[in-house]
Amino acid sequence: MDRTIRKKKKWPLLLGIGTVALLAAGAYYFLGTRYASTLQVPADRLTVNAVTSSPFTEYISLTGRLEPTEVYYLDSRIGGVVDRLFVQPGATVERGDTLLRIANADLELEVLQRESELLEQLNAQRQTALLLNQNDFTRREQLAETDFLLALENKRYDRERSLAADSLLAPADFEPTAARYAYYQDRRRLLDAAYREDSISRRIQLAQINASEQRLTDNLRAVRRILDRLYLVAPLTGRLSDFTAKVGQAMEVGDRLGQIYRLDDFTVEAEVDEFYLGKVAIDQPGTIALRDGDVPVRVSSILPTVEDGRFRILVDFNDPERIPDDLVRGQSLRLKLRFGEPTESTLIAVGEFYASTGGNWVYVLEGDRAHRRPIRLGRQNPREYEVLEGLRPGERVITSGYEEFQDYPTLQLR
Image 1 (tube, rainbow, N blue to C red):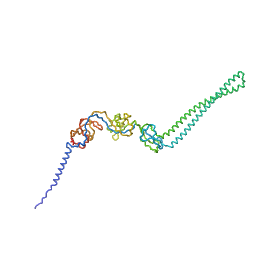
Image 2: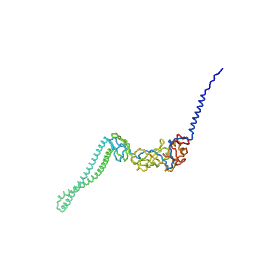
Image 3: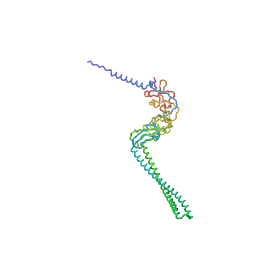
Image 4: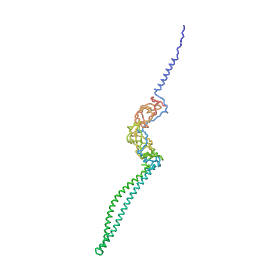
């Protein structure tokens, strides 16, 4: 009996062979591309800089904020309503300039009443002093009149006494003259004693009155100075800041009205990366870029508290007279903080290559090829690295990023 013979299908075998071939081709392509010793790179996508030799200064660039060394706060010394403004925010004011006036009708009325009372008391004291002086004048006038009459009686008494002694005048006629003369002598003694007593009392009372008048006058000045509180006056020459008062605004005692800061005494506050905490020192030099050029500065204070990886420093101007008048509180300034003096060094420009190599190697150009070369870098500033080993002045180095080809020892530029 004949059997039917089934033919074996060949497509599984062919599929397996094709898969193996495809995997082999992919592996070859991947490995060949991955580990090829040379990679072609478009030259226009690279940044190339020449190695130079020149003086190198280590510094860091910072952004500082201008702050006045002294700030005077302006607070309301009295309650009321803002009646008038004499200046605008940001104005430069002189010491003694009036900034605003606060209206307070109740206070003004109270001051007027108090002033009237003090003036009445002062007038009463002066009236008392006037009466004392008038009494003194009356006493002296009485003494002068008595002295005059006593002098006349003295002459008559001497004349008639001589006549009576020579029996030319009867004793009965001489007795009235002698009596009047004795009367005026007694009157003179009594007036003199009374005048002396009045003078002592007058001096004591006048001293008390003068002291009382002085107190009343001082109180009167103090009462009048209360109205001065209605006027806000600049305590110094400077720039008016944060002056936000508006006409009609109600004010309470102690309300903050603004600030004044001097224009000739500034400091710059800047934040520095904590990496430099041990390198920054007091009196460390630097420069600030202003419109007239770089101005020398120095570190005056270090605030070592680290927040978010940064600490703060205060920088003062070496020559305050070079501070421009148009600087404003809070203004941002570019600051360079220098470490050490310039030294002749081999230099390479700062670039993105450092992120891939850590400064341990670079691609150095030789014709249209770039070869990897180990190097050693030293100090740096925002523009340049100091090259300690591996490069010579005049050589050209790729300083752009290496992310796309950092595994290749040689690059072919095209």
